[in-house]
Length: 231
Image (cartoon, rainbow, N blue to C red; front, side):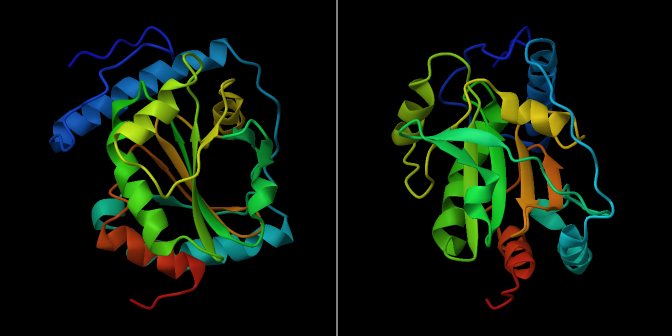
């Protein structure tokens, strides 16, 4: 399979090999990095400042330190936060076109995932994200996946139905600004981009690239981050 990297809206085959080898996954992730790099030349970037003195975000750093020993195996690529960082109020839409921001999930730990149908690694990890939401989603935790396709806006919904994604709510940002807002603070370099965010909207950890989110390693880490270590 050949992935074109000349722009963020190149159509890709809808049925990739569901479990490619490690080298193939790395190559696909690298291709998505190259695709997303072009977005910066298209969309404006608003400025955000780091907030090392934000006391509300210090608990997130403590959570990051607590889960650090669990960053291994299927979630080994996760980077835990080393300083307080309140994330910008990322804005996107729900399935009906209504406005949503991170503030809508205050009080819950969330796993925020940015994905696109032109990103093969994004598509490959979506069933695992769906399984994670089905297993752990509730009052304390949610998986929030935001699609950033900029053309053929019905395609993401159709693809999710075709592959049987049912536990995840649909959110989208056709402007892809949500990616740029994270890029400017150094939290998005390619696709997929996933952030673990505490109930105050502060970074706990970030990963660039796919992970096996339904694995025992991921489930144990998420449970520890939420504060529920029970099996």
